[in-house]
Length: 130
Image (cartoon, rainbow, N blue to C red; front, side, top):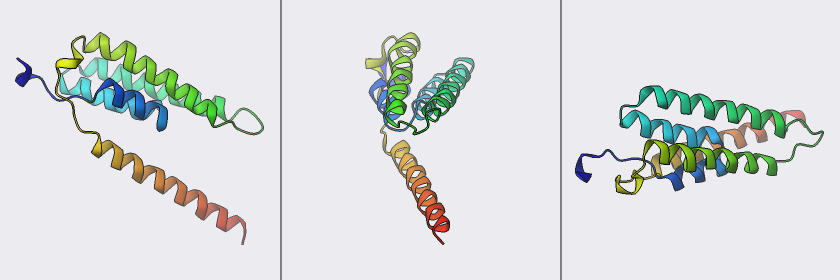
């Protein structure tokens, strides 16, 4: 039976990406898991919720005069907890039986996005100083 199950991202990977990057990243991993098991409707619900949580996070983190990036980690942990400890057990009650996907591809994508944003911030800062 196990050989017929598709590979999925683990709930640890979903939680980790949610905390370290954003709930959107974790949501995309869970979205991919749900697409792989042919639960397209549920996948779009999870993706929409992840986008909503990410937007709320951005707004709340940027409300104070001096934004507190630690709030982003709190929201990431909350969103990741929701995705990993509510949705994963709900849609994958026997998650431990599924073979796990490697996280290298999403990790490389996250690194490229992060380096690009940092590069743009540095570039924008250098334009302000000229």
